[in-house]
Length: 83
Picture 1 (cartoon, rainbow, N blue to C red):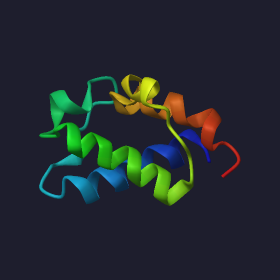
Picture 2: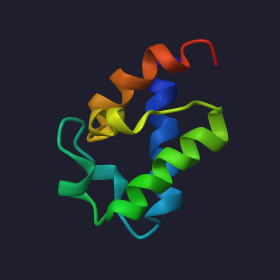
Picture 3: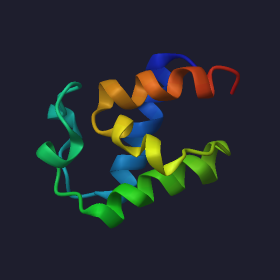
Picture 4: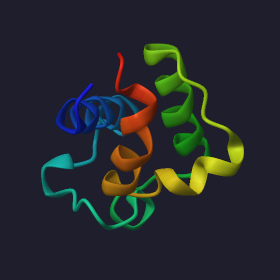
């Protein structure tokens, strides 16, 4: 997957988890939690959806790298490049 495809996949997951949020104004380099009303369970749902949809494992110690769209795409790019 390309960076753009990964970004769209993450947006799709966010739309499912937080359907009332306006994702059109999402800033790439600002933490999701600072922009959206996400709690820790919502964040875990994002990780679980990535696992379910794309069969990727994200170690708990890497969760901080999924803070913003930019950092999430950067982290996932090498993991999802062959998908």
